[in-house]
Length: 259
Image (tube, rainbow, N blue to C red):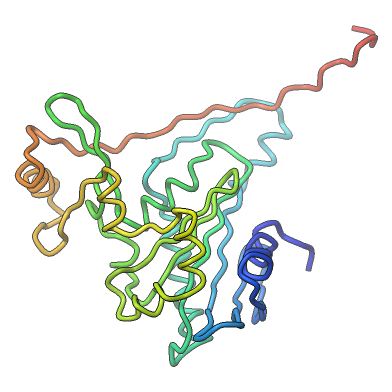
């Protein structure tokens, strides 16, 4: 199978950065792989999912005409679908759950808005944006159902984005949180400030909704909770979108060429 940048980045991290060995179990295509990572106890069961370009991205570029795309900065249903598929494979590969379960999401796609990293983090932590009476903008954790709530068996999620951005998202509610926090994977990210948890994100300016206290299917309930908890006035939830239009430009004539 031809080398894939997503797989190569995943493989290089565990072998070169952590000094571990990667045992590939299955690679169905260039965008997905199952692997055991060995060299420390209890080891890792990893499912790689790489984000590819839109199906018609290459053809649109070839045609040369402009094309547009609209994306939500804090949400990507692709992440939810891939997590669901990954969990099935992890349960199949490690049925007794002896290893730390890792979903590796590579969003380094060569296209469009470049929001893959933020979209993945937003989906993992159920982030939504809200504004108050003064039009001050806030990002709110668990305002929608987080990925760890949907799939609580996932111990960690590594998100790799554009320009080598990386984050380790950790499920604090996992019964194996102590095992995860003692791992080399956790220590590596922590040494670079790359560990993301609800508790750590709150200290960096995020608001947070308590899922046990709020009916998140009711937007008004979420808004009332934020107003009371954070002493805000007239909170409104909003879902900003990014609009990007692109087109392929013809090559410039070299110096001295006939025009």
